Length: 110
Length: 115
Image 1 (tube, rainbow over the protein chains, first blue to last red):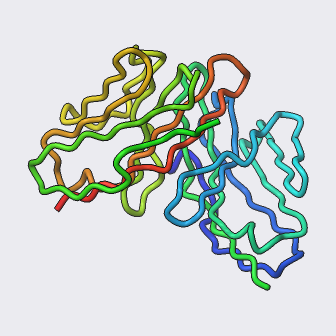
Image 2: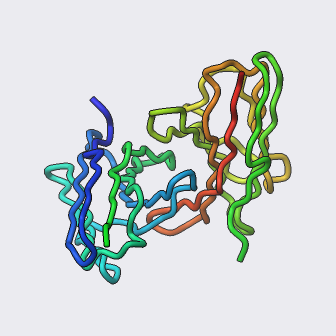
């Protein structure tokens, strides 16, 4: 079983749609949670950290459920520029090493 | 502010040769990390420096890989001798000391092809 599991997609949605990605992690000691986006053949770029109480940044909302070891990302009013691979990333207690999921690909269509 | 930079962007070498990758972190970031993505797999952690000290090298695949960060500024990752399975994209990241989440910022990567 992978440490961080994501649905690989692709998710094909029209502009303006709302789309949600889910992620589960296996290590209950994990303490830090992030969503990164990665464009084709580029580096991962930090989209947002995920806090226990959930957090929002413009059109993006992240939620964390520690009991279920589940993280989600909601994108509202999708733009063409949101097309990318979204990586769920987890950090453990006491270590800075990040564990990456394999990513969920999003394609927003006009 | 300049981001993380890596050199070279691409490298093609033959099996058995040596390659050295370089990473310059964001100025003032004491923490520097190396990660690798091999074809079809997730990005995997290799090691973590705090200034010039190796804090965690649990992800280094074997002793053909040597990472250094002399002076606590830029870092090099040397692969000697390179094997076919070393092909992939090598990312460097850096983060500040302090803060709750130690958010890591990635460089553009070095695409290594071993033939």
